[in-house]
Image (cartoon, rainbow, N blue to C red; front, side, top):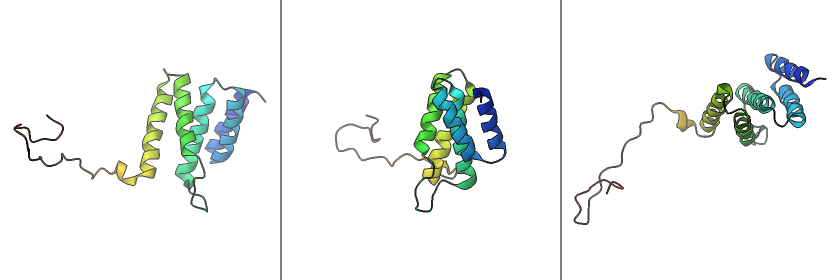
Length: 133
């Protein structure tokens, strides 16, 4: 089977909701074509779809898919094709998604960041803000 057919089959698996099957095909593509960013990007996107659709916690409470590998593959794809806006955007979005899945409060829009209260100065300086002097 040609590499183009392999990627087409992987895309068909994605449209059918078989994300794990697509990941397996993209793995084969990466092994045969380590300098082609499409394999890394396809694998990582399939993994993200799988996580979104079915979660990432197995029966023992561990990760089913290594989220570090997802980020690494997206970084690899964007590194191999630094002018590809789709790969760069996918990498950025995945980092946001993976962070939000680990720390739900990180994506909370109701969280406000406020400055710490002024500190009393114990020296002759008139500065009352930490790290500003």
